[in-house]
Length: 164
Image 1 (cartoon, helix red, strand yellow):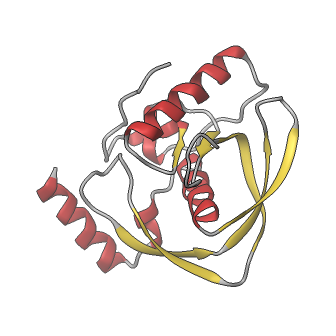
Image 2 (cartoon, rainbow, N blue to C red; image 1 turned 90 degrees about the vertical axis):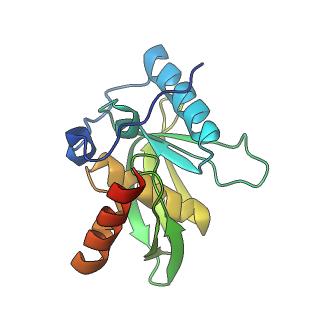
């Protein structure tokens, strides 16, 4: 398939809520394939469709050690989140050169439509859970730095302007 360019912050599409996917088509499968190629090229552990300018609720996540284990999700939603939190250094290809420590639930249960066009519920833990939550934020028009205090967010965005 193809590696697609990622939008650059502050592109307005990164602040726009993505549209639900009506059904899994060949076009959706091709978009997922491009998303996986793009994620692998970064390299990263997840990608949401709006990051490449496709305004659909599509995400891919692969936090496996071996790679090649990407989970393809349409219309993902978090059903349950653990009380126990996990801190992780997060970044985005949409805002290259900067990162921040973000605290998120250590485990989540997510419902989504899979590549077979079936509703699936799956538990994600650790880096998998962090990445899934990060992608779901993108689908809602949120960036990881929105989870920072105003002071830390402003510092990160100033630093990003210097890097970019």
